[in-house]
Length: 246
Image (tube, rainbow, N blue to C red; front, side):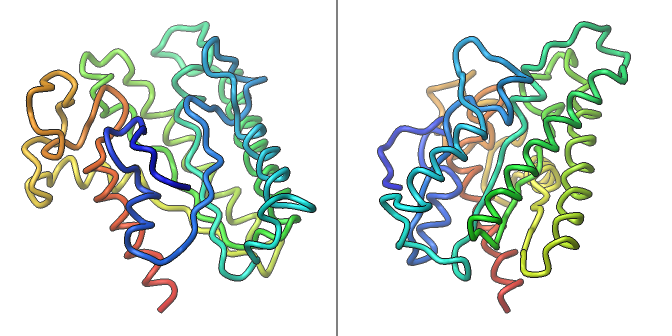
């Protein structure tokens, strides 16, 4: 993956910042606006999903793919950060203050499809996985009015399910390494301790004041963190991975 200068964070995203810390190769299969399963959460503009990304991975990295001989199971880390769009754009035909079983059932199917994909990747030779859980969408600038307070419960459901599903896979396959990174907790720490990172604010979005210097803001816009936020995130992820290797 080469940095084209175009990302949704106003600069380098966290994988590119992580790349700056290590001599390694990065393959990127993520697609803007993706959901886990577009059959469950169809979108008008962004029609790609994790399932599409998996198909591209198979085409490029497996069998006779262009990069088939460029990686091995032992020193390759597979990272997934997806699910926010599933929460945000699923059709909700109910009062926001009432959680109904049907929505939970749909979320469970979506999450299971995600881990089915991870298991299929494992069967192609992928052994090391880093899953970033869902950040606190209810505390993002998009919820300044409190309209989306219910995101808190959806995020909690996804993240609890991620932990459970990861543990199931770890018990099923003894040679799999699967790490669930607590993105939600890290976001909240940065937002509450923004001065520690030389930020001027932990909650406001830069897009409301574009004459300001973006590097001083954690939030780029109503839902994306800035390149500086991604840099902080990458350092924390790097510290975690380094502690495991040691």
